[in-house]
Image (cartoon, helix red, strand yellow):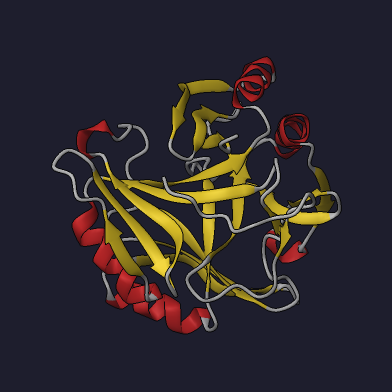
Length: 267
């Protein structure tokens, strides 16, 4: 991964409207909404508010009264992967959805209105990784970053970066910065010179039960302490904590199997 956060004060950085292409929200669809709220409440200190009703049973996670993520309930007959999904900002979700289709991706949900909050679509890139598109109205997206319990970075894990990077460049207007290394296939996506997301080609190291997918990193005050909490709350550690250039990182899964990463910034 790479550094995604700008300077933030003790209360974190509050956001105005997100530029098109910027990851602006993360959402999780699960089978047990109440149990999942309990897990993330204990892990990140989130509180929850319901809505919007158009999305079915759905809650917004708040940290100190500011929205950071969403969690919804899957219909009982839908056997979809339980996964965190990043939403990328758009000024025109209908136009973006059409571009996704033209570039070899698919749109599985929408575009549709979410009350007065905004308009959304959920699609997948040509390799099958699922992402959302969000056109903001009343709801701009994640309201605070840079403090524990908030999304810090989004990274696509896929087979190889070359083809899929072209897709995201065309649809969202990213500029790419590739890592020049024969044994590390990584591209950082930039908007207006600022890193906003990453693409990591891992080849056969992709989980067989998952395929290409986006991974959300959540900031924590202490990665090792958070891992103890995760396992105590019924989650699993998928990759133990290790130090990186960007902080101490670990990969985990919640009790329903949704994968995400934890990062404690450098001290």
